Image 1 (cartoon, helix red, strand yellow):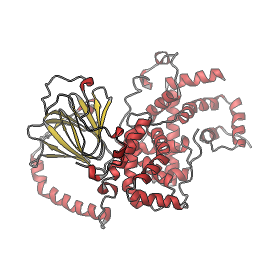
Image 2 (cartoon, one colour):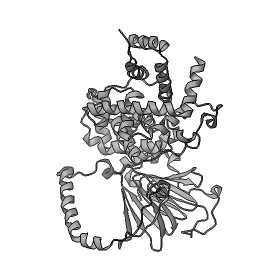
Image 3 (cartoon, each protein chain N blue to C red):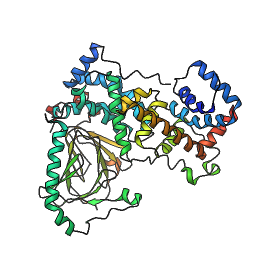
Image 4 (cartoon, rainbow over the protein chains, first blue to last red):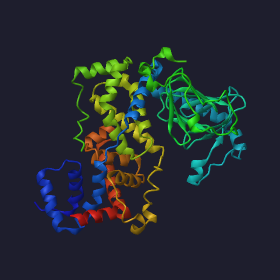
Length: 279
Length: 207
């Protein structure tokens, strides 16, 4: 069988992913010995071969954290099987479309009058990544984000970074409810610690975190995991009696500790995170 | 090395798998733990290889398993449980890539192809598999998520075109075309990349 250089890429791919037969491999090797151009192609495949050898893995602690989050999410029945309308997606889309057209019809004249946009979207990608908006709650004191609702306590100052889905809390407190149906996590940062969540409801002020449902991870400024706060648990910094201003002296990481409640990690009985333990 | 993945078309033959799904649907913690432990390695490996080295890997694995919780009710047993979980993992990875998250770590270690020379790249630098994977994924960031995922599932994970199509929900022809174009682009980028070229030269010298 005559070998054509055009076959090289296909056969190298097959050999790389383990699909090539012994005969095909021999044919390929024989051709590569005499064809410099195809040897160059093989060299370009080398990084892919090494990439295939790379085995991504989680640490034992990471596996444990994911398992705990799964079990906690399972303990909330509404998170397990979200209600789906008998009309299915299309019914919802149709109703939404009718409303959208109706609202558009009502507001287009006013929209045209308001020619000056409230915020200019920066075009520079770096600027876009760093862009942040002051969170302004509606009359109900809430801000709705994609996959999350944030309730701001009175006199709270918080900024929203859409690119990294981060709330920068500068003053006051926020109650965050992240939908269990979203695939996008959310971070809340304060001057001294940050939290990372997925599918949970919790409260953050400058002194600590209280979780109502789900699992909240608290990190130090250097991204070191400080605590995992499960349902009904609270984590506060030592000496923090309540909300402080952002101008308070930054506490040292070593000074922090959990409140008397033990962490989920040290309480195997909590691993199931049963609903009864929710606050 | 990873073994050949099973066919996603395999049906749900094992009754214990059906029982496990049923128990997971009911929120049985033991069943969920068994399900999790059976699939976490594979899910981690596939997602990790699709998105590349990232600090978000744990979040993505978690999102995959949380998503399975929501989806147990829709599991019909047409594919094996393992394939079904991987399909959800592929969806989560695609979602992550579509968000346009670019890797931060690694860009500092390996300069971009356009502004580096082999000398600057450091002739003494030893690129282990992790760093090579990191570099390859920097190049893969230039591909669309659909092409990248089809290509990696086919070439790195070893799925067939039909299996990739089933995992990504795309047609066979579209999948084949994505793999072909992605391979062209990746090889072209790899040929031009100074660090990978240097690596290839080192390997050639060893032979």
